[in-house]
Image (cartoon, rainbow, N blue to C red; front, side):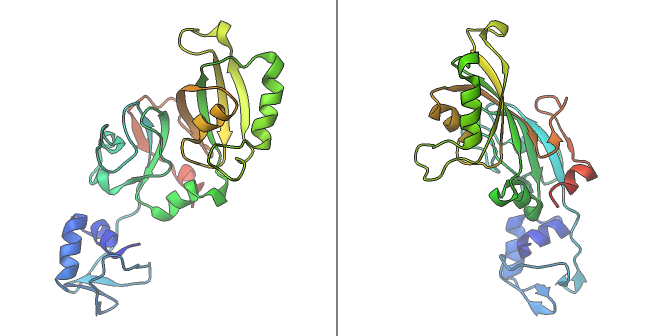
Length: 243
């Protein structure tokens, strides 16, 4: 963990205040003056301020039901950050483990544990993420099997050298079951990577267009009946999936 982050997790100081404190020479790591905010400290290091030993608070883990027109960022831009929805102290010291586009809704994981979030988003971990997707065009019975096979074999995305990893496509509804003025097909798609706009680009690669996107599951963590805009702490079992 970075030294400035460790100080923030051990005190009420902000990141800016922690960096000022470091410049003053009042912080020591294992008895030596430390001024580098990016210095990595570990469990066996002793960090002190004016001789007082610091002890970092435990990491925090949350699930949030993201609403549309919010962004997975620690700063507000055109749209507000999703972190405004999480009503805890120092919410903006948290970060998002697996971002969603502003217009995409659904499951977002939020934490201040960098190692844990790496296990969620690292391509090497092959973590499954399931999306409910609403499409502009039909997926009829005649081409369903072929389309499922194409997603399973991997698709060539524009601007990418390699095919996407195998993905699981399941049709949920057709036009006669839904409002045709809004969308023509509803599917579930499970992927194990997180390329830029990947779901939208995958359907573009097969001649369809995503008009609605909602993430329902990451690994074994399910959004369930958590209402839009609501959040909760993750359970110990949910946290353990990525430790």
